Amino acid sequence: MTNMENPVIPFDFEGREVRVVTIEGEPWWVAADVCAVLEHSNSRKALQTLDEDEVGVTIAYTSVGRRRVSIINEPGLYSLVLRSRKPQARAFKRWLTHEVIPAIRRTGRYAPEPEPEAAPRPGWAEAMVTDIAGRATQLFEHRVQELEARHEGLLDQVTALEQRHAELSLRVRRDAELLAAMSARLAEVSGAMWTLGGRVELLCTMSGAPGHGRRRRY
Image (cartoon, rainbow, N blue to C red; front, side):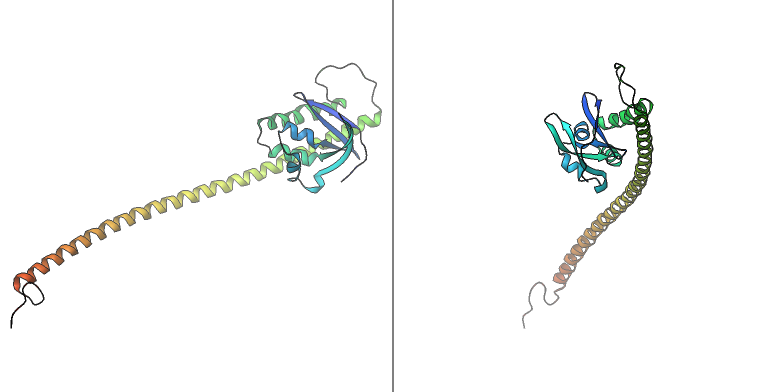
Protein backbone atom coordinates (compact mmCIF):
# COMPACT_ATOMS: atom_id res chain seq x y z
CA MET A 1 0.00 0.00 0.00
CA THR A 2 1.50 3.35 -1.09
CA ASN A 3 0.00 6.76 -0.42
CA MET A 4 0.71 10.34 -1.35
CA GLU A 5 1.95 12.85 1.19
CA ASN A 6 -0.24 13.11 4.29
CA PRO A 7 -0.17 15.45 7.30
CA VAL A 8 1.96 14.22 10.19
CA ILE A 9 0.93 14.53 13.86
CA PRO A 10 3.97 14.21 16.17
CA PHE A 11 3.66 12.84 19.72
CA ASP A 12 6.27 12.48 22.43
CA PHE A 13 6.78 9.30 24.48
CA GLU A 14 9.50 9.63 27.12
CA GLY A 15 11.55 11.90 24.87
CA ARG A 16 10.99 9.83 21.72
CA GLU A 17 9.03 11.20 18.79
CA VAL A 18 6.14 9.01 17.65
CA ARG A 19 4.50 10.28 14.43
CA VAL A 20 1.00 9.56 13.19
CA VAL A 21 -0.52 10.24 9.77
CA THR A 22 -4.18 10.11 8.85
CA ILE A 23 -5.11 8.38 5.60
CA GLU A 24 -8.74 8.42 4.56
CA GLY A 25 -9.70 9.16 8.14
CA GLU A 26 -7.67 6.28 9.60
CA PRO A 27 -4.57 6.73 11.82
CA TRP A 28 -1.31 5.17 10.62
CA TRP A 29 1.83 5.19 12.79
CA VAL A 30 5.36 5.61 11.47
CA ALA A 31 6.84 2.13 11.86
CA ALA A 32 10.39 3.30 12.59
CA ASP A 33 9.15 5.39 15.55
CA VAL A 34 7.19 2.49 17.04
CA CYS A 35 10.09 0.05 16.57
CA ALA A 36 12.48 2.55 18.19
CA VAL A 37 10.26 2.77 21.29
CA LEU A 38 9.98 -1.03 21.46
CA GLU A 39 13.74 -1.39 20.78
CA HIS A 40 13.34 -3.50 17.64
CA SER A 41 16.80 -3.31 16.09
CA ASN A 42 15.48 -4.57 12.74
CA SER A 43 12.24 -2.77 11.89
CA ARG A 44 11.96 -4.55 8.52
CA LYS A 45 12.01 -7.94 10.24
CA ALA A 46 9.44 -6.75 12.79
CA LEU A 47 7.10 -5.61 10.00
CA GLN A 48 7.35 -9.01 8.32
CA THR A 49 5.41 -10.49 11.26
CA LEU A 50 2.37 -8.33 10.41
CA ASP A 51 -0.36 -8.97 7.86
CA GLU A 52 -0.13 -7.23 4.50
CA ASP A 53 -3.10 -4.98 5.20
CA GLU A 54 -1.47 -3.76 8.42
CA VAL A 55 1.59 -2.23 6.68
CA GLY A 56 1.84 0.62 4.19
CA VAL A 57 4.11 3.35 2.81
CA THR A 58 3.60 7.13 2.75
CA ILE A 59 5.60 10.30 2.13
CA ALA A 60 6.40 12.41 5.20
CA TYR A 61 8.78 15.15 6.24
CA THR A 62 11.81 13.89 8.19
CA SER A 63 15.01 15.45 9.49
CA VAL A 64 16.50 15.00 6.00
CA GLY A 65 13.47 16.22 4.05
CA ARG A 66 10.58 14.48 2.34
CA ARG A 67 11.02 10.71 2.33
CA ARG A 68 9.02 7.54 1.88
CA VAL A 69 8.44 5.91 5.26
CA SER A 70 6.83 2.64 6.31
CA ILE A 71 3.65 2.98 8.35
CA ILE A 72 1.40 0.60 10.29
CA ASN A 73 -2.28 0.89 11.08
CA GLU A 74 -3.94 0.40 14.47
CA PRO A 75 -4.09 -3.43 14.31
CA GLY A 76 -0.43 -3.55 13.30
CA LEU A 77 0.52 -1.15 16.10
CA TYR A 78 -1.23 -3.23 18.75
CA SER A 79 0.24 -6.46 17.37
CA LEU A 80 3.79 -5.12 17.75
CA VAL A 81 3.10 -3.73 21.22
CA LEU A 82 1.44 -6.86 22.57
CA ARG A 83 4.08 -9.19 21.10
CA SER A 84 6.98 -7.22 22.56
CA ARG A 85 8.69 -8.57 25.68
CA LYS A 86 10.50 -5.30 26.37
CA PRO A 87 9.70 -3.65 29.73
CA GLN A 88 8.76 -0.36 28.04
CA ALA A 89 6.09 -2.11 25.91
CA ARG A 90 3.71 -2.12 28.84
CA ALA A 91 4.37 1.55 29.56
CA PHE A 92 3.93 2.36 25.86
CA LYS A 93 0.61 0.51 25.76
CA ARG A 94 -0.58 2.33 28.87
CA TRP A 95 0.53 5.66 27.38
CA LEU A 96 -1.52 4.95 24.27
CA THR A 97 -4.67 3.80 26.04
CA HIS A 98 -4.64 6.01 29.15
CA GLU A 99 -3.18 9.27 27.85
CA VAL A 100 -2.87 9.69 24.09
CA ILE A 101 -6.18 8.35 22.84
CA PRO A 102 -8.31 9.88 25.66
CA ALA A 103 -6.52 13.23 25.23
CA ILE A 104 -7.09 13.20 21.49
CA ARG A 105 -10.70 12.35 22.10
CA ARG A 106 -11.13 15.33 24.43
CA THR A 107 -9.00 17.99 22.79
CA GLY A 108 -7.99 16.76 19.35
CA ARG A 109 -4.30 16.58 20.30
CA TYR A 110 -1.99 15.17 22.95
CA ALA A 111 -0.17 17.76 25.06
CA PRO A 112 1.12 16.66 28.49
CA GLU A 113 2.50 20.13 29.12
CA PRO A 114 0.44 23.36 28.86
CA GLU A 115 0.83 25.02 25.50
CA PRO A 116 -0.05 28.49 24.25
CA GLU A 117 -3.54 28.81 22.92
CA ALA A 118 -3.74 27.92 19.29
CA ALA A 119 -6.24 28.92 16.69
CA PRO A 120 -9.42 26.89 17.03
CA ARG A 121 -9.63 23.85 14.84
CA PRO A 122 -12.25 23.71 12.12
CA GLY A 123 -15.32 21.71 13.05
CA TRP A 124 -14.55 18.97 10.54
CA ALA A 125 -11.09 18.46 12.07
CA GLU A 126 -12.49 18.11 15.58
CA ALA A 127 -15.05 15.61 14.36
CA MET A 128 -12.41 13.64 12.45
CA VAL A 129 -10.05 13.46 15.42
CA THR A 130 -12.84 12.43 17.77
CA ASP A 131 -13.96 9.75 15.34
CA ILE A 132 -10.42 8.44 14.90
CA ALA A 133 -9.86 8.31 18.67
CA GLY A 134 -13.14 6.47 19.20
CA ARG A 135 -12.37 3.90 16.53
CA ALA A 136 -8.83 3.43 17.83
CA THR A 137 -10.08 2.80 21.37
CA GLN A 138 -12.69 0.28 20.23
CA LEU A 139 -10.23 -1.48 17.96
CA PHE A 140 -7.58 -1.68 20.65
CA GLU A 141 -10.02 -3.05 23.24
CA HIS A 142 -11.27 -5.65 20.78
CA ARG A 143 -7.72 -6.67 19.92
CA VAL A 144 -6.77 -6.97 23.59
CA GLN A 145 -9.80 -9.18 24.26
CA GLU A 146 -8.88 -11.47 21.36
CA LEU A 147 -5.28 -11.81 22.53
CA GLU A 148 -6.31 -12.38 26.15
CA ALA A 149 -8.68 -15.17 25.05
CA ARG A 150 -5.89 -16.72 22.97
CA HIS A 151 -3.52 -16.40 25.91
CA GLU A 152 -5.97 -18.22 28.21
CA GLY A 153 -6.28 -21.03 25.66
CA LEU A 154 -2.50 -21.40 25.45
CA LEU A 155 -2.25 -21.48 29.25
CA ASP A 156 -4.77 -24.34 29.37
CA GLN A 157 -2.74 -26.26 26.78
CA VAL A 158 0.48 -25.70 28.73
CA THR A 159 -1.18 -26.92 31.94
CA ALA A 160 -2.41 -30.08 30.20
CA LEU A 161 1.06 -30.74 28.74
CA GLU A 162 2.71 -30.24 32.12
CA GLN A 163 0.28 -32.73 33.71
CA ARG A 164 0.95 -35.25 30.95
CA HIS A 165 4.70 -34.77 31.37
CA ALA A 166 4.40 -35.42 35.12
CA GLU A 167 2.43 -38.62 34.48
CA LEU A 168 4.98 -39.87 31.95
CA SER A 169 7.87 -39.01 34.28
CA LEU A 170 6.24 -41.00 37.09
CA ARG A 171 5.66 -43.96 34.78
CA VAL A 172 9.26 -43.89 33.56
CA ARG A 173 10.53 -43.73 37.14
CA ARG A 174 8.41 -46.72 38.14
CA ASP A 175 9.50 -48.71 35.08
CA ALA A 176 13.13 -47.91 35.89
CA GLU A 177 12.66 -49.14 39.47
CA LEU A 178 11.02 -52.34 38.22
CA LEU A 179 13.83 -52.92 35.73
CA ALA A 180 16.43 -52.42 38.43
CA ALA A 181 14.65 -54.96 40.69
CA MET A 182 14.44 -57.48 37.83
CA SER A 183 18.15 -56.99 37.07
CA ALA A 184 19.05 -57.60 40.71
CA ARG A 185 16.90 -60.74 40.81
CA LEU A 186 18.44 -61.99 37.57
CA ALA A 187 21.89 -61.47 39.05
CA GLU A 188 20.88 -63.53 42.12
CA VAL A 189 19.50 -66.35 39.96
CA SER A 190 22.61 -66.32 37.77
CA GLY A 191 24.84 -66.54 40.84
CA ALA A 192 22.79 -69.40 42.23
CA MET A 193 23.06 -71.27 38.93
CA TRP A 194 26.83 -70.87 38.90
CA THR A 195 27.02 -72.17 42.48
CA LEU A 196 24.78 -75.13 41.65
CA GLY A 197 26.86 -75.94 38.57
CA GLY A 198 30.00 -76.00 40.68
CA ARG A 199 28.45 -78.38 43.18
CA VAL A 200 27.25 -80.72 40.45
CA GLU A 201 30.71 -80.84 38.92
CA LEU A 202 32.22 -81.54 42.31
CA LEU A 203 29.80 -84.38 42.98
CA CYS A 204 30.49 -85.88 39.56
CA THR A 205 34.21 -85.74 40.23
CA MET A 206 33.86 -87.41 43.60
CA SER A 207 31.63 -90.18 42.26
CA GLY A 208 33.94 -90.88 39.31
CA ALA A 209 31.29 -90.18 36.75
CA PRO A 210 32.53 -90.47 33.12
CA GLY A 211 33.74 -87.25 31.70
CA HIS A 212 34.74 -85.89 35.09
CA GLY A 213 37.88 -86.29 37.13
CA ARG A 214 40.18 -89.26 36.25
CA ARG A 215 39.65 -91.16 33.13
CA ARG A 216 39.08 -94.90 33.60
CA ARG A 217 41.54 -97.35 32.10
CA TYR A 218 40.35 -100.31 30.11
